[in-house]
Image (cartoon, rainbow, N blue to C red; front, side, top):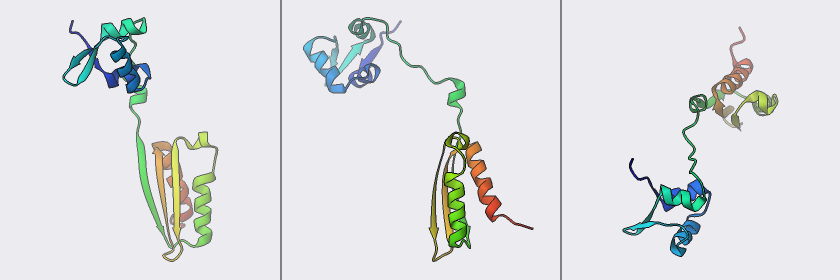
Length: 143
């Protein structure tokens, strides 16, 4: 089995320490390390000895968590007066409790001189679809 070595940065991440703290441990001799050029490398065995137990590295996230889609959407609505802009803004930013909206963030800008509204929606697909439905309900073809 090949020997596993860690950089000072990796050890700091694994232990939740600052890089300077890990370097100090190496310089003080508290953590065994090998100097290669201008950098230190720490063997896994030495790191486990230093921590007093086996290293538990976090693996990749579970498949469910790894498969996640997010949408970034910019919607431009022309011919918007101040009253409609206020209604859309309220509908997009206030409607429903946060847990019902999912993970989404909305910013709305109204340009009264051009009668134009732009909404930027960033979030999960379901929440984005609901918010786009709100926009469609206020601006869609009423025939």
